[in-house]
Structure formats: structure tokens, C-alpha cells
Length: 255
Image 1 (tube, rainbow, N blue to C red):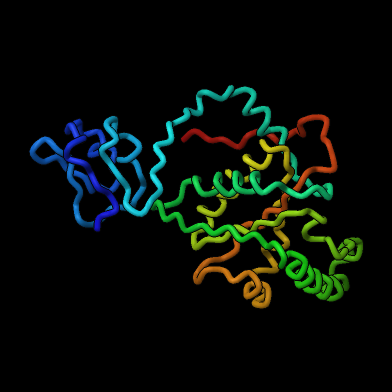
Image 2 (image 1 turned 120 degrees about the vertical axis):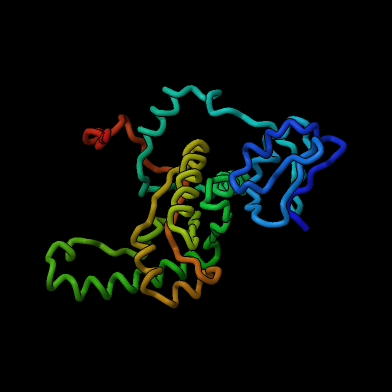
């Protein structure tokens, strides 16, 4: 069965879906839109653009949610909020509410993916969070003993038992075959988390450990072929920043 079904009763042959299909999977015949047997990437453009609601996506929960334009957000406020974000490394003990976790995951689910693969996986460490951190701490402590003899500054780093997750209540590992897809999802999720009053730390050190530790990868039970791209440490901030930090000049080029 095709991923797309078009109701002949509702279709008026306006061709909007045909023109907007990135895979050239739709065509007009006898004044109605039809679907080719192959090539559909299930992007949902036809479903979203049809003014008559004639398109259905098989296997999807079609809720008929209305579109909200980004222009409804004040652009200056949005930009100021994006400039104000800070990486948070100090968290309170307050747990993150289940509803807020759902909203964060929903933001990640709706991020763009190449070819509409929708293959990004979000792994909440949950009850395995403490064990995962212990594995990482052991790796870094061993590495510090070896590396300190070569690079003296390594001696100053205190690798505490909470070095990776900073006692935060929530850790979400984002994985995918495509690093760009996972990175975009993480960015969407961070913006949502910030809007909910939460702080986020991208633990690059955890990602490093995941690359070298089979034990850690086995603990997470990642889907076959996927790699850890980001590790998002999330919780309520125990710190408040007073002003936007400066940045170097933008590196933009016109060719």
C-alpha cells in the first residue's frame, strides 16, 4: 500500500500537491491527483498543503493540527532569547515534569531530517543514568593519570562522581546514522527546553566516551548503525546569568 491515499471525492484537481512534491510522486489525471507506486519519502507536504483535506498518510496519526507561522513570534524577542542562552552546569534537584519531557521530545520529533528519514533516536538514560556516568568517570580518570604526565593542565581537572551529568535529573542521548539530523533535532529540543525554563548542557565528554566504550554503547542499546551525536543534560538551572555574553564578529562571506 502506498504511504499516501488521495480521496477522489474531496480532490478538486488544484495541483498544489503535485507542484510541491519533492519526489515527483504525484500527478494529475482526469482532473484528480494520483500517486505513483514508488518514490514517496512520506514528507507530508501533500498532506499539509491540500486545501480540501483530501490527502491521508497511511500509518500516521493525522490529527488535522492547524499550521502556526513563525511570523506570529516577535522576531526581536526570539533573537534576544537565542542570544541569551547559556550552557548550564549547575542544576537544582527539582525533577523535570513528564509533560515537559514530552514537549522536548516532540520538538525533536518535528525537526527536519535528510530525505525525511525520521531516524533520529532519543534515549532517556533514566535508571541507567548513574551507571552510565560511572563508566564515563572511570574512563576519564584512567585517561587523566596517563595524560597528566604529558599535559600538566590535566592535573587541575577534578573528575568528580558527577563530572558528566552535574547531578541533573534528566539526560537524553540523541543518536542517528546522520550527524546533521541528530544535531538539528538537538537544537530544536534545546530551544524547547529553554522555553520551559530548563537549562541544557551538551556533554561532549560523554559523546567521546560513547565512541570508545563498547560497554557504554551496550548499556544504551542503540539501534543498529546509529552513533551517539549529542548528549543533552537537562534540568532546572541553579544559576542565573545577568547579561548576554559577547561574541566575535560574524564570519559571513558574499561570493
